[in-house]
Image (cartoon, rainbow, N blue to C red; front, side, top):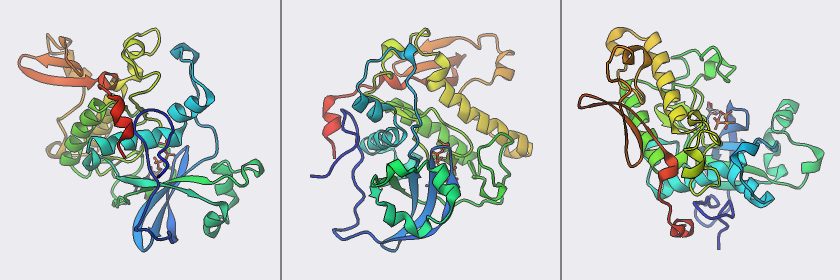
Length: 318
Ligand SMILES: Nc1ncnc2c1ncn2[C@@H]1O[C@H](COP(=O)(O)OP(=O)(O)OP(=O)(O)O)[C@@H](O)[C@H]1O
């Protein structure tokens, strides 16, 4: 039977398969990098994909304030970046959220020699954190849908982690993409996923491409008692922050575009306009989260992913 990862209760990711045969990988080119991974355009058995190769560096920490007691195995499963992305994509499959994300088709554990065709750059070795002690350990990779964008439309944001202007992502092509993103985030959060890393580099054409910092229910910190207790987890660390990050992208779009192209949809109430609305801070606690109402109009919301009702059976879905 296929090995679902990570080996803890909840959604899982399964090995990438193409028929029953072996996988022939052709490396087309390096298309992106973040803090935790490099991404290549590849052909696998002649089909185009984006292959995300994760760093060997430990990219997580467990805050003492969260007050979780977890074994080493659980720590790696709930907080390690590869595992976080596997669990989030497992839930995305369970809840049919594919239209809102770059799809993920499975993982491949690549041997060092499989990686050799492109292993000619010490810079890569360094940024992927590969050391002598990792010899024999596979590179953890995820096979994803390749998202084509027009790299020439926008320059990167000033504090962007994208250092090459020509590689800047097109996070929205138009207002329709922004609305798709807002709808998608709402559904993703309602499905028990806290993304925690929304920025211009992680949204392409209105779809999320990166879940390496996502927490997915069931998760030792993503529980009501902790997430709704300010002393343990600041409200800004929850669904509110994810929603405000989408709004930041919308703000940036609006700064760059003529009034006729501006996007008026938002996740949260706009602070500039809210001050002018008498009842702007009237809130309603709903089943999934907090909603701001003005008259009969919902002028903002944020979802609390920790309220997702997880049934133990979910972990068995393949
Ligand atoms: N499916 C995809 N199709 C095309 N390009 C992609 C895809 N996924 C990622 N990229 C490119 O690779 C870059 C890095 O990918 P990703 O954000 O997944 O890495 P990361 O190390 O997890 O990032 P971060 O530092 O934000 O955590 C993206 O900003 C994007 O430019």
